[in-house]
Length: 335
Image 1 (cartoon, rainbow, N blue to C red):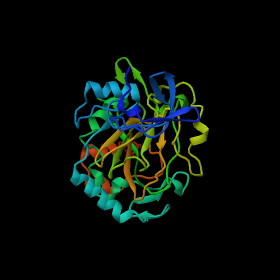
Image 2: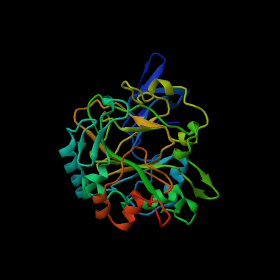
Image 3: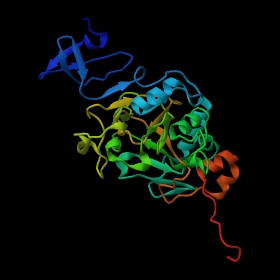
Image 4: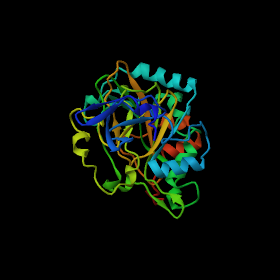
């Protein structure tokens, strides 16, 4: 059996093999385990640009391959989901807000982080920042896919208030040395974030769309996922070493985790129950992304933010329903 080119350049170090790889799977320089005289697998982090991850064609329609890979891996990558102009418009907004501090308001956008500055800057309610981010609410590159994975593309009670709801939306700017630790996983059994497939239909509790506004390659602090972990029944034995905390952690080196490398304009669609986090950024410059979290319309806001009346008045009826499906309560006439 001949080895793939990426495994031919290897050295033995302390009983393990380290591989320098330049293949479509972009396997980084990491430890591998010898299973057979001519077969090696990686025991740590890989980075995939093709193959396992996705249907590698930009498409605004849902394919059978999308459905298969989302069920199998818990995510798909949409190449060229955003146009160059759309990416430029979003970056222009982030240019104006990159010096925002956690706790500071810029209009209706709020500076924030979850556990500390080591995660970078979150700009919560980024859809309040103008047309560049408003158009992402129901962007045609992913909206029908998201609705399908949530399970409301056919009539049922889950779409009683509309097909989907965004319970959180934010942009994130991350610089050298910053990362976010590992979190979620199928073993957590959280209804809000669940993955479920029943009677031929998806019923996911939360589907995230992560959009890249700059290229994200090796050393850029890529999003990291553990494929298939959305169906896991057993906690990851290494979880505690990389979990989100009030000190810097990352998913680097966690067994089974992959880096998802993206070009500006690509979008990563994943069920929230998959274990995910990021690599630490080691390169200079900024990683820039946004995340819109979609779920059934019966859900509610994660944080105490609400869309402004000004925003609602600017949006289309479809967009209004996605960000605010809840109507005022019905009261007796005398009240």
